[in-house]
Image (cartoon, rainbow, N blue to C red; front, top):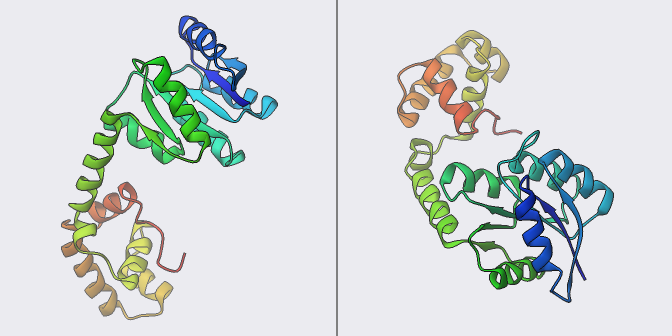
Length: 215
């Protein structure tokens, strides 16, 4: 049996899912959560195989709930079932660890197929979600640091610069001369297409470049 937990703040949606899934011989609905906080608590209590997770819920949204569940129970699968197909929702959901992303207009039989495929180790994405992922990857490839990767030492300098350190402090931390630091910073500005230290630091934070190459 595939043990399913339903997490959705709409009673009608939960009832509809429960009614349909009960007709499947290999699926058992073990619980229902009205918000993300309950979803995390019930996952901890009931240990389901898969959580059908809504995205927008009170107290804790689906993305944060998914992160907490996957951090504690990496073997429990999460299938996002939502009304949103834009990149602002799709990308964070996949990054949070969701194994699938389907829209609520999915045909019931397709939903069951998605659940079974996820349990078989496959990822299932709605075509619109797939499109958003492809667009996101294409945009990532066009980013300055992807086109012009930083060297390990430039990453080290950028990590120190992001902490607000002066050239002298960076030089001291990395055991190099101030002149060397200035050269690295100049190269960083050029590669990241930024004009000053503040812009470089903001770029680093936004794109996850704050860790040194040694970490």
